[in-house]
Amino acid sequence: GGGIASGLLLSSGIHSLLSSCSPQPSTPTKTPAQNTVARTPNPKFIPDLEINLKAAPKTVQLLSGQPTQVWSYAAELVKGDPNSLQAIPDSYLGPIIRVRQGQRVRVNFQNNLPQGQPSIVHWHGLILPEDMDGHPRFAIDPGQTYVYEFEVINRAGTNWFHPHPDQLTGQQAYAGLAGVFIVTDPEEATLKLPSGTYDLPIVLQDRTLDANNQLLYLNSKIGTPRNTGMGGMGGMGGMGGMGGMSQGNSSQSSGGMDDMGGMMGFLGKQLFVNGQPDFTLAAATRVYRLRILNGSNARIYKLAWSNGDPLTVIGTDGSLLTQPVIRKYVMLAPGERLDVWADFSKLKVGTQLALNSLAFSGAENVDENNMGGMSSSNAPELGAAMTLFNVKIGRAETETLQLPSKLATLPLLRPEDATNAAQPRPVELSLQGMKWVMNGKPFEMNVATPQETVKLNSIEQWEIINKLNPGAMMDAKGMAHPIHLHGVQFQVISRQVLPELAAGWQTVKDGYVDEGFKDTVMVMPGERVKLLMKFDKYSGLFTYHCHNLEHEDAGMMRNYRINT
Ligand code: C2O
Ligand code: CU
Image (cartoon, rainbow, N blue to C red; front, side, top):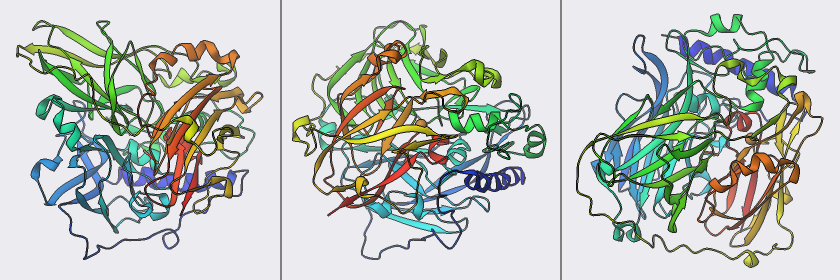
C-alpha cells in the first residue's frame, strides 16, 4: 500500500512549515542536490566483512489482526563469517551485526524509502572518520547508495545503528529503522561471559498503534486546540498515521498537542522489546548477558528487577566497565546501552519475574495545568511505572560461569589532565520559543563555531548545563535531555543539581552508571554534568545532540570540529 508513503510525504511538507516558522535563521533545508553525496567503493579497501543494508518499507505481523507497515533494514551478507549477521525474526528491527575489533567492514547502504525521505546510517557508538559516521550532510536520496568502509577500532561493547537525516531521524527510527552492532575484542574473549544464545540484545522501544495496527507518530488525536503564539503552526510535526491513516488522523488534527509532542518528545502507549509486544524471555537457571539498548525516541527507563534483586552492570554504552557495578536501579535514556549480568542460577524452575521501569519524577519539569495534561494521549507519562518484559524460568541448567571481578582495562583519564580543567567548555541546554537549543543556537548543517572547535589529541572537560527556563512558553521549565557526542567516548566526572530541583533528581541519581566510557549522558532539568574526553582518533566535523529524537529533529543538535 501507499499508506506509509502518503503519510510521510505529508510530513515533509509539515517539516518545511516548521523551519519557516522558526525564529532562528533557518537551517539549510536539504534539497536533493545540496547535501547529497553518494559514496562509491574504494577498490583499495579489502573488507573482511561486507554487508548489503537496505532501508525499505516492509510488512510485519506485530499484533493479531492486520499486519503493520514499517520501515526496516534488510541485510544480506556479501562476504565474511555468516555469524556476523543475525536477523531478529518477524521484527521490524535488525539486523544484529557482530564484529571483532580490527575487522574491516564494508556496508553498501541503499536507501529504498519513499520519495521525500533522504537517509543515512549513523553507527552510534563506533569511532569512525567523519564521512563514515552518518552525519546528516551525507544523507542520500531514495534510490541512492552510500558505501561505508571502515575499520572497527572500538573496544568490546554494544553499539547500534539508526538513520540520521536532518529533521527526519525521529520518524525513520520510529518506523522501525534500527539495528545492533556488537564489537568483541581479545581482552573480552579472555573473560568468561555468557555467549551464544545466552548473550542477548534487548531493545526497548515504545510505540502507539491505531485500531488497524498501524503506527502512529505524534498523533494529533490528542488534546485540544491551543494558541502557541506562533500562528499557523498547528499540526507542526504531526504526521497523521505512519500507515494508511494519514487522512483520517490529520482531519482530527487541531494543532497544539502535536507541537507539544515535538517539544516534549514522543511517548508511545505500548512497549516493544526486540520489536515484539509482550516480550517474554524464556530462560534457564543460569547467567545471561543482556545488552539493553534504549531505542525509544524519547522515553527514559528506570530499570529494576521485580524480585528486588539489584542489577549487576558490566558495561555501559560502548564498552565494558573495569569491574562490575551493582545498583538497585539503573537509568537508561534514549541512545544509552547497558550490559547486564543477569544471574538466574539461584531461581527455581517455574519462577517468573520481570524487568520493570520504576516511577521517577522531575524529568519533565512542566506546569501540567497550563499544558492541558500530557497524559491525554493515554500513553504512560514520562516517569510512569511500567513492566518492560517478563522472564520465565522454564528449565534447569547447571551454571559454571562466575562474575569476573575485573572486566576491561580502560585508559581512564584524570580530570586534571584536561587543558581546560579550570573552565570546562560549556554546553547550555535551553528553550527558545518552542525549540530546545544548544548554546542558544539550533542546528546548522555545515557550521562549527570557534567555540565548537577542539584540537586533535587534546583532553578537555565539557560541562552540560541543563538550564531552567522560567516563564518559557507553556511553562516548560525544563526537561531531561540525553546528550550524545559523535566521534568520541567520554567519562562523566561530576554531577550537580540546582537545589530547587533536587527532589526529582533524588528519584534518579542513584541509577546513573558513570564509571566507564559513554557516548550518551542523561542530564536532568537543573543538572550540570561534567564530561572528560580525549579527541585522539579522527579529525573532522561531527555532531553532538540531544537523543530525544524529536528534540534532535527540531534542531537540538550542533556540530563540533576536531582540528589537526
Ligand atoms: Cu544515535 Cu547522532 O545518534
Ligand atoms: Cu532534549
